[in-house]
Image (cartoon, rainbow, N blue to C red):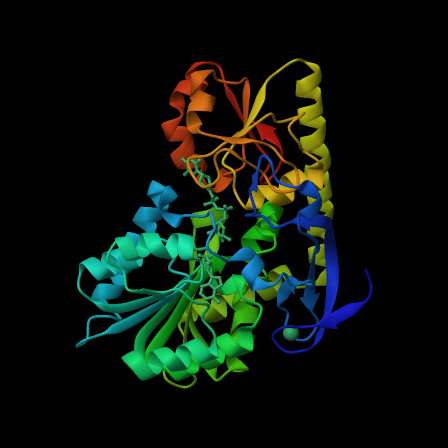
Length: 409
Ligand code: DWN
Ligand code: SAH
Ligand code: ZN
């Protein structure tokens, strides 16, 4: 626990503060006849850099193991998220993309949930998306997409073909990329001097406040704060010029970076940096206390599920999220406690959850014969899901939540 590894941003010493132990790839849903002895595991642990304050994983999973032609997360699966991205696209059209012949590049455009709106409005755009499964869906929506990983070389190729961009955008993608030097060099090369790099990702401030520890899994390498992003930008010729807190995915921040010296940083930047300092957000004591809270949730959740099983109650999982891999594997929740998880994604249905091998079934399996309890793994979509599942409540069903603490509602 006490050894340090070099920070992926500044090479300073990263001190580990929580070890989740052996974990599988969060989106590697297995066929029922898979050879389990071949399943890939790694040690999931998080640390904080003593120099730049960036919170990050201490072990890196090779990117091709996670993002490939079978990647099963399709962003358009939530109506609420579709609205969120449509709203942003429309806002960009009246702001950063309102000049003559604007050009926008999105990293990790997935199934075109955001770019679809911009494509419909005829804006020059390009999505860069390594996972062919989701990129194909984007292309089907009329989105121009390039099936590759964004990095410096990709940026230079795009620059040669399309010229500089007014906006480079990434949602829930930048935090997935350990090789940040290459990304930011690419952004610098591809962005117009007047352009902006906008990205939104889960916010460490919310993760710590709500103990939403399941945001920590293989794909999420960095856990940003305004302070660490400001530092990261400054080391790479960029400047953090705006921050906006978002409620999606349990709490995120949308960061706006511009080439250094081009734009005046907003007051929101200084305010959020000051708040983080006041909270001692990146201090080891704060982060170790977060770790203690994680252990409490683990113990409470396993105790609750064990008691419900002893009482003969039925419990079903709701939403085969990537996040749930961390929960089920940390708590040791397998099919004996939760016999199946329902999920709307065809690519996950009929498969088994990574590491814990819980069958994933269609939502019909849930509504056909309501269980006594539903363990809400997709807690970040609680509002949308609970609104759609009012019959479950009417039938006497109860939801189990574990963020910010274990409770039955
Ligand atoms: O960062 C990431 C986020 C954006 O998406 C990726 N690394 C992977 C993925 O994480 P996740 O799987 O934890 O995301 P969600 O959005 O919480 O996943 C929701 C899951 O629940 C999907 O599999 C779809 C499913 N679902 C459902 O069955 N019924 C979702 C909704 C809204 C529903 O009503
Ligand atoms: N923007 C979507 C997708 C998030 S999932 C949303 O907010 O819902 C993360 C996505 O990042 C995946 O589709 C994955 O294939 C993609 N990704 C991972 N590494 C990438 C890289 N180097 N360049 C571009 N996309 C990448
Ligand atoms: Zn650092």
